[in-house]
Length: 501
Figure 1 (tube, helix red, strand yellow):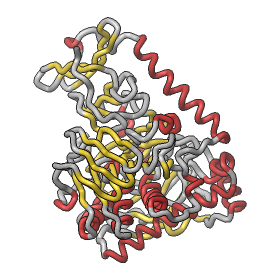
Figure 2 (cartoon, one colour; figure 1 turned 90 degrees about the vertical axis):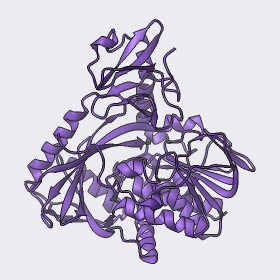
Figure 3 (spheres, rainbow, N blue to C red; figure 1 turned 90 degrees about the horizontal axis):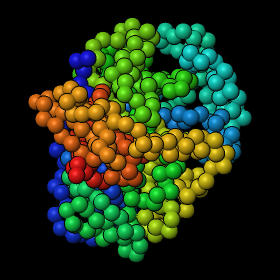
Figure 4 (cartoon, one colour; figure 1 turned 180 degrees about the vertical axis):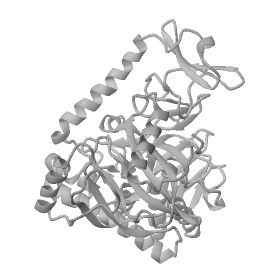
């Protein structure tokens, strides 16, 4: 496949970059993570007169999972309102719908107030049956009527095996996330905030005050800390049992302008497919995602992209050259809602925004509003809806299933390796090898040089697995990802794979 393994959002806007933290500092609020959750939080707090420092480990803000989103601004839950109502009741389901709508409204308000050119547009959303049939649509429609959540019935504006009416939801949105967040970064600075990239946070001490420690030995002392790093690397162990890491796949292909009406589309299959358009030069891109699996628990990445492209070509005959392909990390919670608010376990003045559940753009935005209110001492009715400390007895089956899967991954320490010796590994590939009581992660580069590391994820000791589609080492336990030579790419791990002893 000739397409790049990067998303269409990448740009070189200098406003996204900054210098690393070079000295100890003090501020009102330290935000760890410069994606949509962290930057929106910093923007809102700086607007309230708070001194804010944003620390991000990447070379540029919005360079983590936010850069690998498909940027659906949907207020309609991926896991559906009927399921949420069955788990947590009708009032929580209604509140979730209202809060995600409010998140899109907040983005629209910021775009208009600040004059941000980011291709923001209001669009409809369509939920349509997959090969699983229309039963899920019928069940969801009944719940929507009972809950009073607005929808109507319409026909899909593109060819589909399903010829009947589908569910249509008004006033969703789409935008270019990096253009939007690049402007937010500039506005944070204008409001007196500071941003430091290439700054690796390794520990957060909660309290009065909080202290944020970096890998280089610098410390930020703050009245409050917001951990907005997609996966909470240091915000309480209990959060990890409430989240399951999934990898989702996406590609962007050229289509003639106007060939597909600008809307959000997603089906009812498991895993489901999701589609949108995006202006690009003199034409448009069709962005398609799906083929999800548990992170570190598949080795057929290239096949998944191929299946996704095949699915799209059946429905969108105008589909042209595939220009980008990429994957993203999704953290699912048992009830499908984010974990947002005060960090659990008595961690004073520490807050988290995590558990995106496939809705990172809206969860990140509503999470920023909620956390900013909590820091400012304002009441927010959503605090209980999204509390990271909540337990979800109605989702006990999902919770148990995911944690049994997690526990089973540690059995990899008892098995043999993928191969017996480095000589069996082709150039440009990796494999695990057993050596006595331990396992090694071994990568042979294109020149034949062998790089040998411990296969133990430094977060909580899972055995990393080779991802041949992206040449990474992925942890099947909590979703940490590492480069082929062991450097950390995605948390919750904060250190790379250790050199083999």
